[in-house]
Image 1 (cartoon, rainbow, N blue to C red):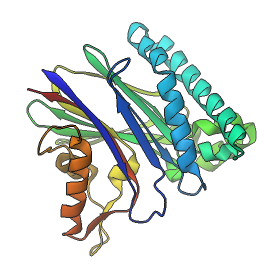
Image 2 (image 1 turned 90 degrees about the vertical axis):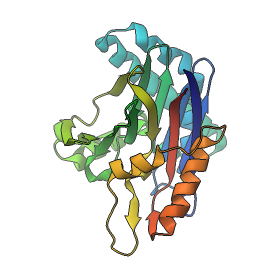
Image 3 (image 1 turned 135 degrees about the horizontal axis):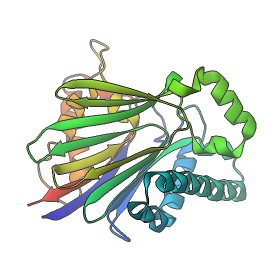
Length: 276
């Protein structure tokens, strides 16, 4: 089995500037890194790029997770998040922009010989498709639709205000597991590390995306589409070529548009897919 790898990002119907950003590559290993800037923060598209590019530069350190136990992985996850945002903050200051442009989520995913690892800083989605074609979605969400951004580590006052807004910090984050059997929810503390590992053997496809996956709405009925239904369509690739993710997203958006279905939010998705 060979591997196909691609990523793509596009603007949402309700946005004037695309605040999502993503990139993928093969060195030092197959990887996808993406970010979703805060829609309420001007220039967060700049912050999204800074976070992704700095995460990419530290990717060799993320790879060490495969040799660590859970406690060590947690410590490394937090350490790397702090390094990424500190680097990005210095660059933002050098550019003459406020550090609040870094109000953006970050998702780092990479593959080794046996597994795919996904680390999230903020919200996002993971889509899986088994060899048998079963699709599942993991959604990481926060209370008040307010992700815990790495940028809050730069300012104690902002961090305290965030905790006050969240109410009970122990249940401020929700991880939703959606498959054909239904939905299972797990409540977590807002600053608990969000890390996943998936064995490759049973999977045909693993994709990661921003929360734009959850913003598809029928403009006639004002009903949101189920995220798993959207995932099934997005992962049904017509072909696997050098632009297979971008081609699929563009095609789906056109086909949905013909049915009055639009994506309100920006959408960024990266995909690891086995080729026969």
